[in-house]
Image 1 (cartoon, rainbow, N blue to C red):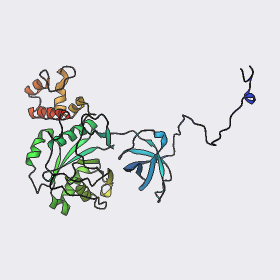
Image 2 (tube, rainbow, N blue to C red):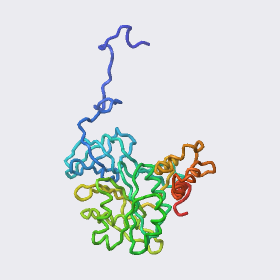
Image 3 (tube, rainbow, N blue to C red):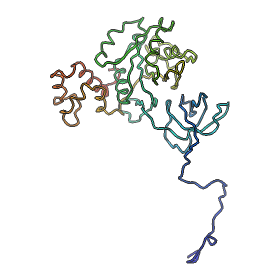
Length: 335
């Protein structure tokens, strides 16, 4: 049965009132052109601490962002109360395009990626030379993650007063990874912090390492006005206790760069890494892959890199290092 005639107009159409008194739903989202831009310093139970024009404000992720995650280092657009006063809450309405993303998975069989930080430029891999013992496989995995994310790696070796650094440094000599060696005495008098700070100037650097390696102690020496809790290594297990529970971005003195302290990790899965991208970190070898068979793993009999090295275009140790890093995706850190 027709409710209206053939020639209806607006007055003939019955419009039901909106009983809830709210606006009708729409797929059109506001552009928030007046939003202020800031940098996410930390994320704590859904609350985002954002630095905007020298003030730290607390914000929530807007519903319109859906499931899009917001992590430390993100550049975001914020609206609402930006005074930074107590009990005020703003809204993050947009996440700007990221220049880099450092990811990891729980293990190599886990397809779920965890974004560690965004927009970092350098990855500082902090490793103790003793107490706890260094784990080269974890270092290798962090290097692969750095190369995959486009970050420049930096090896920071702590506790050189307990064990020499020469052996571990020799392992990574052919990779050309820059490094800094520190000990507890130099950290106490500020000498070690000065050497590390030289490597961090005007850059955003994320610190990654096992619990107990002295990562947060080093960050405290770099940014003394923002002391974070530190812990001790368990004498029985040889492992450190997690004292840093969330990532935190801290400005270096005189605003000469940023350090991002992260919770200690016990694994660094590489399920998300495409092995074909690792070769980009070896420009002296990458040129020799033109004659490789299709989908070459660079560790098979027909790989052209063997001939490339035999002809003297690259150091054999570099090819060994490449293959060692590529193999880390198939190995557990404890192997």
